[in-house]
Length: 234
Ligand SMILES: *Cc1c(COP(=O)(O)O)cnc(C)c1O
Image (cartoon, rainbow, N blue to C red):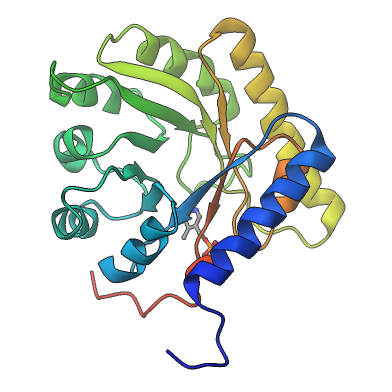
């Protein structure tokens, strides 16, 4: 490692301090850090683990399974944050603790059937497409209620909240608007389903703004690990 680059553990300290400060300013409880480790090697995860980080987010099921093998014996909490294809639902249900990308009813019975009775219920977040762009994953805001009903009817699944990846806005006011919209959806869901406690939004570039608007879990990759190695093809 070059001496001019801060170490991963130093970056972790900095991010945790920024999360704590943003949480204190926001005044609604402490937000948690999900370390987004997609395309990073298991050694990088192990370094953060040694510093006490336990929540890690992965985008690709196959890549995550390989890392889980490499890091067997740890008590890492694995979160799937990338889009979930139906043909990966079975593996995802048994190998992750959380899935953030539930955006269609079809996934719900697939995940419920595949979550073993011996495992704790699978924690799920409904991903909302707050931007109304057909190309992005996530359900429309008006579909949240039906998805939430379907999930909460399944004893092997546990509805925990909402996730969003708002498109970058040209100005800060519009960015805040997207986070506020998510927070309003989250509060409405929580009234109906009291176990809901997680609003996953905010990434390296905007996690402090997200916390200011009510995020309880921020997904930070680049600001923690540095630039990602190039994606492997496919
Ligand atoms: C990659 C990714 C992140 C992390 O993005 P950074 O800008 O590197 O912090 C967060 N959430 C999702 C869904 C991602 O795919």
